[in-house]
View 1 (cartoon, rainbow over the protein chains, first blue to last red):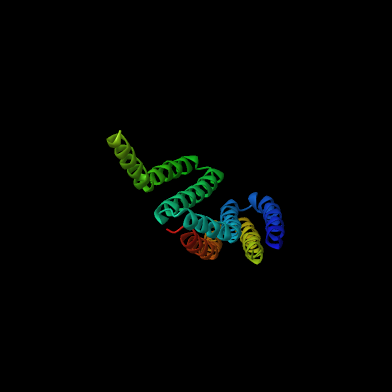
View 2: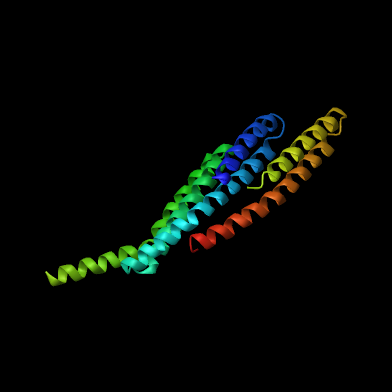
Length: 131
Length: 64
């Protein structure tokens, strides 16, 4: 909880500093935004770690293949990173780069999900074969 | 969360903008540009460390 309050305080202070610097030095405000976004995601990761350990325990209890959880987690990570990058690019005024990153991340998520789709196709073929 | 970094970036930003103003008004536009560029590079190096730490953390957590 302490970390969350520090986070709120840090974001508010950054917003005020952003207001002061934005009229004089826009380039440094971009880097400031980037630094603060990295810190915020770093704190979020601290709270996500026990959650992912819990997912791992659930996977072991359900006796599922570890590759599936790995693919899911990678998809979440790719989505998170691409969203932050896209928002920062849009803030700078370069929406084209932001959109392109989103398109690439969607393609990458589909690419890493291919084993899941192949497994699904195999299961459907087996079921159709039995019928 | 290390709030010091935010204050450092803000301090560099304010210093760079003041120096930029002083040099511009003195008629030294090129030196003002160089000062801005130097400040940007310094802040970029500070931010690059944070980004590297973030990527390491995400690599471990999301099994990349």
